Length: 78
Image (cartoon, rainbow, N blue to C red; front, side, top):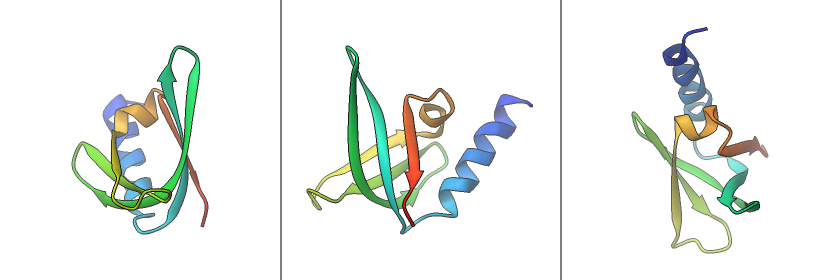
C-alpha cells in the first residue's frame, strides 16, 4: 500500500475517535518509553492534539507519521 494512503487511514482512524480517552506510549529516546493517558482533542491535516489527564492544562501534539513509524502507539480506551 502506498504511504500516503496509510497516513490517510491513520488520520481517519484518529479523527473517528476525537473526544475519546486514549493511552499513549511514546518513545522518549535512550530506551525510555513515556506512557500518558489523555483525550484526543483535535485533529489537523498533519498533527493531532491530546489533552493529558494528569495535567489538564497540558497538551501534546504528534504527527500521523509518528504513529506510522511507531514512535507513538495509541490505544483507544473507549
